[in-house]
Image: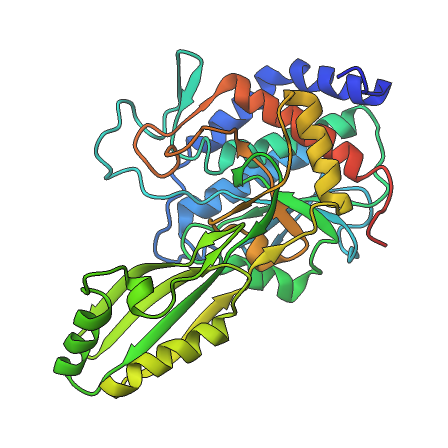
Length: 380
C-alpha cells in the first residue's frame, strides 16, 4: 500500500473510523425481511422489499446525498452532478431483495436478527447482497465526508428484484441512461471481465407421447443432456455450455442454457429446432441475456484490479464467471466482489454469513475503486 497517495490513505482511515456506523446501518437493513411478496400499493415486489428500499433512501438522505426512486423499484443515491439530469455517470448496482429464509430449515439463529459469532455476521442478505452494496454506500460517504469531488457523478443503484427476474432493470433503463462504467458487488473477486450468456428455450409438442419421447431421447439418455443435444461446447476460458432448470408439462419442455460467447442463442435455437423436428416439436427462444465481456486491459478492469491487488496483496488478474448478475441487464458494468477466492456456497443457504473483516475490506476496496474511477473521465 506504499503506492497510495494522501487522499487514498485518508480514505482508508475514514472507512475504519466509520466502522461502527456502517455495521449499525447494515444491521438495520438486513433486519428487514425483504423477501418477494404479492404486489401492494407502491410496492411492486411486496411491502417488505419496499420497506428496505425506503429505509436505505432515508439513510442516504441523512448522509447528505441526493436520492430518487424509479417507479418504486430502483433507488438512486448520487454524489456529484444533477440527479434529475444525469446521462453520464459511474454506476454501482446491487440489490436489497433476498431469497427466502423464513421457512428455510437449518438456521441456528433468526435470519433477520443479525448476530456476530466468531467474527462472522450471520443474517440473510449479509453477503447477498445488502452487506456489499451498503458497503459501497459507506465508501461513497467516505468520499463525500472528505470533500473529494468526482470528475463525473457517481450513482449507487439499489435494485429490488435481482433474485426473481431482474425486472427492475428495464424499468430503470426506460427512465435513466445506462452507466458509462461501474460494477456490481454481487459475484466474486478478483475483477470479473466476462459473464456467460443465459437463454431460455421452450419446445411445444402436439401430444404427450412426443413430449415423453423427446425427454427420453435427450434428457434421460445414457449421456449428458448437452452431448445428446449436440450442444457439448467447451470454451477454453468459459468451460462447458450448461443446460439448467429443466421443466416439463404434458405438451412442453422448458430449460435454460448458460452459454459461452463462442456461440449465440440463435445458433443454439437452430440446433434445438433441428433435433426437435422428428418429434414435431416447435422450439422458441423465450429470453436471451447476452454475455458480458470487457477487455482485460480496459480502463475499468485495470483500475479495479489495481485497487484489489494493492489492498489484498493477491493476484487480481481478471477472471470469467458462469454466474449471472445485474451486469447482464444494466450494461456498462462488470461484477467485482464481494466474495474472496475460496469462499463458495454461502449465499442462499441457511446461516448465510460474512466475516466482519471481509466486509470492512470490501468497503476499503470499493472506496479506493470509486476514488480511482472518478479521478478522471475515461469514458467520455
